[in-house]
Image (cartoon, rainbow, N blue to C red; front, side):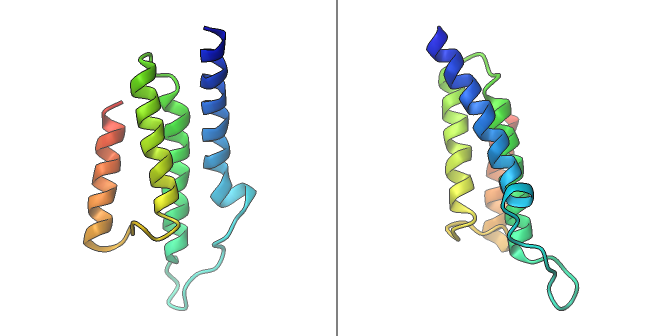
Length: 107
């Protein structure tokens, strides 16, 4: 039981750190494109921030197996998007965003 609480708190802390990373701790994308719109890294930062908050929220799910599966999927998605495996723009991006929203709705 005590070890379980350690993992829950570690999940909360790491989710918050992940949420703060793109804009507070290590801001990467500060400038705009020449036409005044945001660059792709801005949208990836928002995506990582939302998933970091969702990882912290998943730790409050009572069933630990479901919590671990949802947190793992969100963590993998946080790695895939900035590394270019998934894109947030275009047809593929819409599919990825819908899948992530469905995963969050499963909460």
